[in-house]
Each structure stands twice: as structure tokens, then as C-alpha cells.
Amino acid sequence: MPNSVKDLFSSKWGFIFAAAGSAIGMGNIWLFPYRIGELGGAVFLIPYIICVAVLGFTAVIGEITIGRLTGTGPVGAFKKALELRGNKGTIGECFGWFSVLVVLTISLGYTVVVSWIMRFLTGALTGSAFITSNSTQYFDLVANNQVLLWVIMTLVLVGIAMIKGIENGIERVSKFMIPAFLILFLILVVRVAFLPGAFEGYKYLFVPRWEFLFNTRTWIFALGQSFYSLSIFGSIMVVYGSYAKKSEDIVFSARNIVVLDTLASIIASLMIIPAVFAFSKNINAGPSLMFITMPDIFKTIPFGQVFMIIFFTAVFFAAITSLISILEVVVEAAQSKFKMPRYLAVGTTILVAIICNAFICSNIGRFTDILEIHFIPFCALTCGIFIFWIIPSKNVIEEIQKGHSKSLGNWIIPMGRYVFCSLVILIYILNILHLK
Image (cartoon, rainbow, N blue to C red):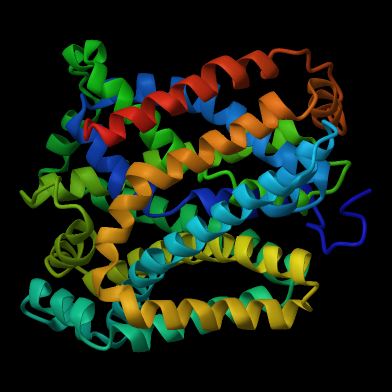
């Protein structure tokens, strides 16, 4: 078996929490509440859940499957996909390296955000973020001064977690941090429910504005949000799939990954939207919602510093597991292609990330926009084509069926070919036309 000599996840829930950790992140915490508030409240959940349950579920199954089938990340997986058809794998390998490069670039912007979170968590613990009279000024200082220092600290911490390997590093971190994130956010949900004025937030969240259901824009954003939230990049889930045992039930795992990710988004909305309404803040604030609005709210409630610590601890757990999964794509490629020992692959990846951040972290916004509009949909489409069009259908079905007690049927192939790939093309075109 291709992955028999690799360090694998030791349990099904270890794999599920690690994969869910790659999905649960900033898209759930600050983007989803904004989307649900902007696009019809509870009505947005209808297209979103449909997109996640049908297309997201299909994509997660597919990406895990190609990873486990080939026993490697995108570089080796796309190469072997062509070889299964009797062709040379050089073109597939090139596409795989492009996916790795895109993910490395994603990690740069994400590292900056995680470093902000780490700085705010430290400020919450010491009290400096809580006692400051001007959260906007505090955020400006965090964002514009000594960014590289916090980036280095963040990456070193990530490297320590990753160097221990899959079972003893990534799996252990994820099995602790993802349940802890959900529990801590649920504590905040309960606290927010007792804020005066929170009821208006619940009305905004739950009272359906049905006109949005028939708005094409709502469905387009729901589709894009589902892809972004589930880390459907053609790389992360492929790598984690390569670390899954042959006995693992891919369908069961994919279903629980989707459920945990959706649950995280809903819990975040139940906390953030009522809190924002209780204090008449702007729900459309974007990143400043987390780093300015929420700290201002905590300053005005009893035991506010405690709740600020809980908030940034939970956010840090979600963000750090996502960053680990992103960088693991690069580490896996270095190990598989260049036969590096893990400590050297991790160390090299962290060093490259630090050097790249030193040059572009102040201008990362431009790179992020290019990635979201052009490269991420392209990588998702490329992976979908390799899974559902290039690899023989028989191989895909047989791999998914391993560990799955019931007969799967053949539905996933036409779903992946004609629905998933077509809609990714649609998203790509709309992004280019700036309709996203």
C-alpha cells in the first residue's frame, strides 16, 4: 500500500478532528456571520447547507480519496493519477507543485492573521489589550509594528507542533484544540445571550428574509463560502487523506468534517451577531470585528477580561490548526519528493515561510485577493478533474468503499464530474468578473 510506511493518524476521530481543524478557521468566525447577516439571516442557511451537504461533501470525499489512493499529497497524487491512465505523470506533477505553491502563499497571509491573534491573546492575558482605551489604536500597533517578530513566534510554535509528526503532533493538537474551541465558544454563546439587546441580534439571525432565497447572489456566495470554509483547495484534504488508514470510512469521516465545520460557523454566528447588536456595532466590519469590535464589547461587561481570554484562546485554537494543515502540504511535498527527514522538511518550510513573510507581510492583502479570485478556484477545479475525470472510476469507487460497510453506488462520479466541476468553473468566471 502506498501509505503503509508513512506516519498515519492513529484513530478515526484523530483524523476527523485534524481535517476539521484545517477547515475551521477565520472563514467560520468572521466571514460566515457577516454572510449570514448580509444575505437573509436564516434564509442563507438553506443554500449554504445545500451547497455544503451536496457539493462540499462530494469534494471532501474526493480529495481524501485521491490522497489515500495514491498515498501522497498533490505532487505525487496528480502524477499517479495520470500514470493510472497509462500516461506520463509529468504534467500532473507540475499541477501538484502549483497547488503546493498556492498553499504556501496562502500560509503567508494566514500566518499574519494568526500572529495578530497570538498578540491579542497575549494582550488579553497580560491585560494590555483589555485596559487600552482605544482598541483601534491597539490593533494598528499590532498590525503595523513588530509584525515579523510575532510571525516568527507563531511559525516556531507551529513548527514545534508539526515536527512531532502526524500521530504525536498534528493529531494530538487537533484532538484537543477543536473540541476546546467548540466548548469555549459555547460558553461565550451562553454569556452573550444575557446581554441587553441581544434579542435584536437573534431576530436578525433567525427571522428569514425570504426575498434573498430567490437572489442569485445569495446562492453564489453560499457556494463560495462552502468551498472556502471546507478548505477545498485540492491540497490540504489530499495530504490528510494520504495519512488516513485504509480501514477508515471516508464517507463517515467526510460527513463529520462537514458537520463540525458547519456547527462551528453556526456557533460563531450565535455568539458574534447578538453581541454586535447588543452594543450597536457594525456587523460588516470584517477583520476589525474580531480585533476592535469584540474587545470593545468585552471591556463593557462584568468579568470582561476573562471572556476576552476565552474568546482569543478559542480563536487561536481554530486558527493554529488551520495554519498547521496549510503548512503540512509543503512539508509533505518536501518529504515525498526530496526524501527529507521530517525535522528537516518542517525546519525548511518554517524558514522559507519566515523569509517570505519578511518581504511581503506588509502587502499580503494584494496577494490574498489574487489567490481568492484566480488561484484557489483553479486548484479546486484541477483536483476535481484529476479525481473524477482522469482516475478510472473503478479505482475511485473501490477506494471509497474500503472501510465503508454499505454499498456506496456510483453517484459520486457524475456528481463530481458534472455538478462539482461545472460549479467551480462558474465560481471562477464570476470571480474574474468581480461578481463574487
